[in-house]
Image 1 (cartoon, rainbow, N blue to C red):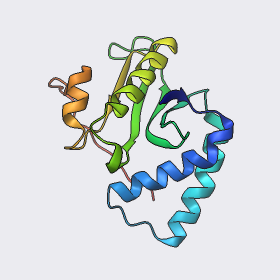
Image 2: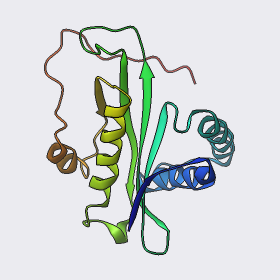
Image 3: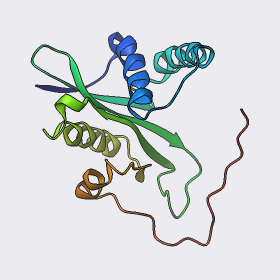
Length: 157
């Protein structure tokens, strides 16, 4: 087993992992959206990989990726919640079903936590699925404390 950060030679694999993640979540992606996503992911990974986007890959002895996790970094003006002005979002945590319960996702996320510390992030956040909740709690992630602000969004597409 090998655990490492992805490099530019892995971009095709990162795109495949992203689509495999969609499948694992039972998201239906039309051909039109698939083409749009593929084009955007290729550009995004080429521009951001190992700058403000990191991907932890866990490979088996045959160098096949069996688990992964992504870290996207955003920067903003410093504030009380984000004193360094930098925070990370973990996404696309995926372990193929036949490889689960071996600690691979834990290893991938721990590598990203180490990278987050090197990048001077104030915090890391994620959206936990029911399946992932025990893992994230074990690693020290907590549900946010009460806030006087309500999370809202506006969809533009």
